[in-house]
Length: 447
Image 1 (cartoon, rainbow, N blue to C red):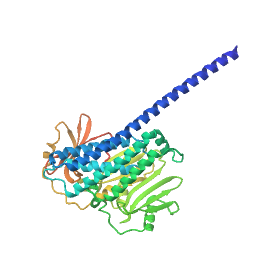
Image 2: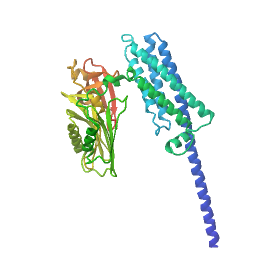
Image 3: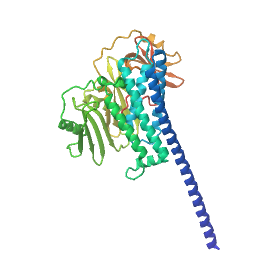
């Protein structure tokens, strides 16, 4: 009797396990099908939007009316945003696709900045017209490449889940047709970017705007290694590797990496003057032993060790026992957003884990900051009266056209939300309004 009871119980358990396994299999298949459908939709929409983008740029070239040109540029900007959104939904996280995204972003920046200005008073320059022609040609090439990938994918019934599998397991032999096609697109765009390094499409990142404050004598590779040992706090070069940037890089630099059993570190250091542009250190972080304020003091001292003086703390936050600090250059009590620097500090022992000075060395200069034409009280009248202003500053920011402007910066509260409002200190125009979340907006993040 007991034997039959045990057999019955085991049979029920086996049936239950089988049913559970079947349900799990069904749910897994449903998730995979949903993901595949999302990838297919995003890819076909990307191809469609690139078709439209090419056509709309061509239409802009044929236009002669400044009245119609601005809305046309707005439409091109909208399409680049749609295309970027499509790219972001494809399983390309493990496949470098940054050149294509940068190309689309540059089209968006160029068309947006052109659309918001008065084209009646400031029509397209010859250089901008030439840029538009180049964009038309380049977008056409990308469109054709994507259409070719689409044709092959449809003809061979290729699945995007296989693409994700191939990216996650590069050693396995699977059909890489889609990956190869996107690599071709990326390689083509890389050529466009190299050929257009002087193009006004780059906007505020044009060559004469990049790294204009690097000073000092040129350092050798050995000098860079010596500086790296000091910054990484190591005694010998045993675990250090160094490489020199190639032709076409934004600035001649050395890239230095270090690793041992406890930590990994990486740094970009400029050849001109030996200035660290990026530092990243990765290691296990223990429980907090110092406060966020103490971390800020260590970050400030660290900046001063590189002669980055007159930097004032703009904001700070804590993530996983690491303090993240943003500093703005301060000139005679005027905060300069363009010259932002960011530092990461481990709150277990105060070690600096990260530094980004790119914005500072790109933008810093000996500025002639004017006196405001309107008073602070006059600027406040331009702010929504429902905003309860808590703090005010004078600041220099980049406006939507990439131009530095002097502003009154107001930090205020409206319906339990905090906003940062920038009013032009010369004409009272509202330049920007930004809603802050709980940790504030990270203006200078490069990590």
